Length: 255
Image (cartoon, rainbow, N blue to C red; front, side):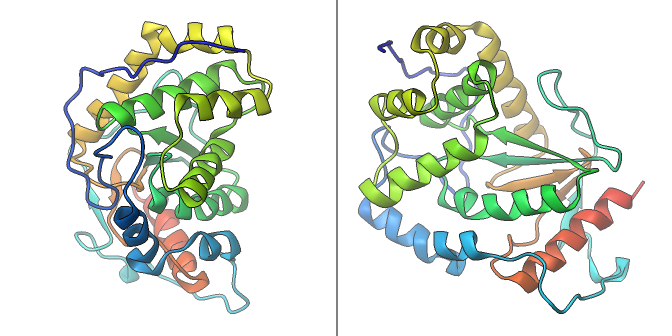
């Protein structure tokens, strides 16, 4: 199974991201970058994997526990879901802006998945951010896999990027991605055709435009019902997860 993979130069502006900065090299991160990302905010992959968002002691939160300007900000113009994304749930939707190669996003992924499992009436929509050439390439892979795979491979892709970073201290190469595809039974020719389809560029443009309009300058970032950008720190403990989930639910209930 062979195909030619090109790095696509998306016609979008680059952001200087705070939590995960755009990669300087298309081949991977530096040793110092990897070590720094492991220590930032005390987050480690082990903590993320073992995080239980439902501790034995359940805390109660009220609307007064969440402060606009500190825990969240309100957008002047709401973001809308695209036609290539799932419909809102009965209780609304949550957008997560991410980059598969971002350690913070990798650590946060089990937490947002736990939220989706607990609150099944809320649609959790993962959006891969094309903030520079490398990020645009990874985002294009992300959306192409959604199109050609028999099952959703979002989580498997994020875990694959995490393993590559932790085991080899770099980002996946096109050859690595070929191996990932083979592991999951993805046809190379079908993937290549979908990867080159201009419709993928339209998806990246939509995501990047929304990021710029909402002034999203870090990943992972959640936007609730297209109106409320969460600015509270991502959780790193069961207690923090409980408060974070309560914040999301509070914003879902706002008009």
